Image 1 (cartoon, rainbow, N blue to C red):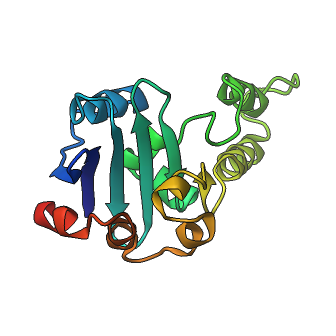
Image 2: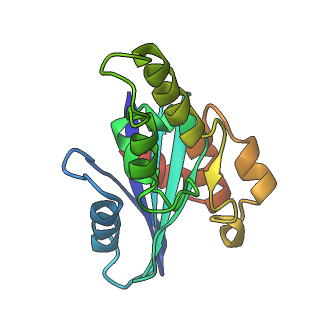
Length: 178
C-alpha cells in the first residue's frame, strides 16, 4: 500500500494534496506534477511512502533540479514508485553503467554456448544487488532549512511522513489528504 502527497509551501503556510502517481513514469514527470501544484514556484515536497518499508522525499524549488532522499534504496528498488526516484545519479552510477554490467555478464570469453551458464546468472544477480545499496541514499540535507535535521531524517522510520509534516507545521493539512 502506497501513500503519496504533495506539500506546497505558500504565503499562508503549507497546502497538501494527495496525488496519483499512476501516470508518472519518470522523475521529470514527477517534477512537472509538483511544479503544477505551486504556480508561484514556491517549494513543493513530494512525499511517498510504502507501508513501513521505505519513504521518499522529492523537493522541487522552482525550476531547480529535484532534490531526492530515499530512506531505503534496496526496498525502494523493488517498487515501481521507488524506481522513479532511484536515478543513476542518486545511486552514484555513471550513465551507461548498466550497459557495462550487461556486457560483463555476456559470454565473451570464447567458450561454447551453454558453458558457464550458471556462473553468468550468479554474476548477474550479484551485480544488481551491489548496484542498489541497503539504507538511505540521496540528499540528507533536503529538509534541513525547513527544520528537519540530517540526524532526525535518518532516524525516521515507520511513520516518517507524519513526523516530517509535524516538523514542518503541516501535519493537519497532510492528515486531510491521508
